[in-house]
Image (cartoon, rainbow, N blue to C red; front, side):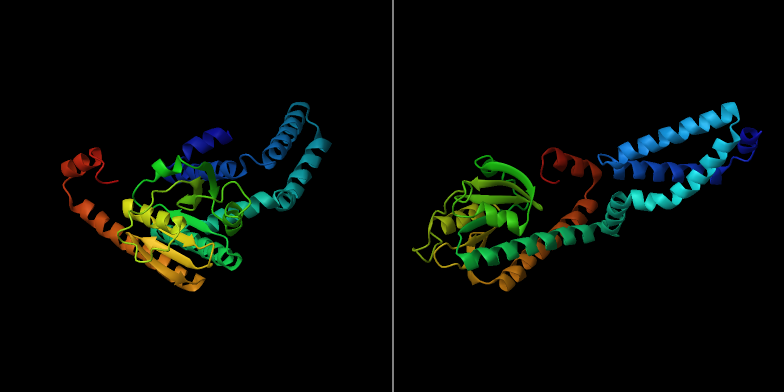
Length: 285
């Protein structure tokens, strides 16, 4: 009778209600996937189903009473049992930006903070470093010359890579987004006609070289002086500290954002056939 009543009263609000419940259950399954909560939840559901089946078939009144009280207690115990998973779910919800641009800005700020912190520590210890930030021009050709890492960038990881006694310190670390794609990468050396200081070493020439053949930003730390420099577009800005490096990298990224916004506005104004043609020719993303 309850099923017939449900079908008789089914409407758009009921459909929306079902879709929302489905979405919540699906989201919950995604959040606990790959965690220990999956086995715990599976075992709990199995026990409840078996007890529910027994109480329905054999009319076990006492067991049904126990099951009802257990479910009530379980509702209070769930936040305690699944505390890590609930914390991770709330963290994910808090990380969801209201606007797409906010997410990009947050990631860019994270990258800048990590690189500036690592560069400051490397400069204090006078450990030479070469950090390349990929922008629009693909650097896969140079990534292939190094050792693949595919690890999220952190100051600790960069300090470990450029520790003088490691196998990866002699070369460049190339970043794609907030990930270190590879370390110990070989970069092209600058042709030399733009180098004012002829005493610059191989590391600085490589930093200029990659900025001449691509739009990448390169942060270089001198092993001899501990000075921080940054290259872009074949030009080098030297004698930086962590604060000035942060300002310069932020300015570079903001310029990228402005160019990306202008390009997006231009693409929206293009007729659809021309837009598709440019996509096929790989002239736009």
